[in-house]
Length: 86
Image (cartoon, rainbow, N blue to C red; front, side, top):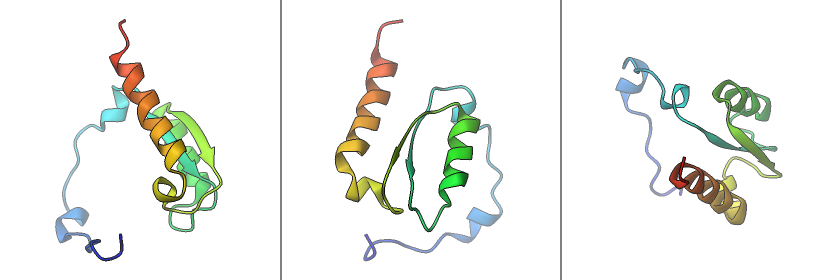
């Protein structure tokens, strides 16, 4: 991951974003309890603000690498929820 990560583009600091999708669409969130990049309490706050279906894992920042099964479960849960007949 380190080999391909690039710095943020300058436009990141100036672009104005439209309405975030989570305001109108269902959301799912995986909180990394030991994240040292994004504080876990901030992650919890983001998830709560989104009204997200949330789980927590005992992981650092790259939970998608260290907790593959839980990450896949989040993706499958989200996909199944939006594909389910209303």
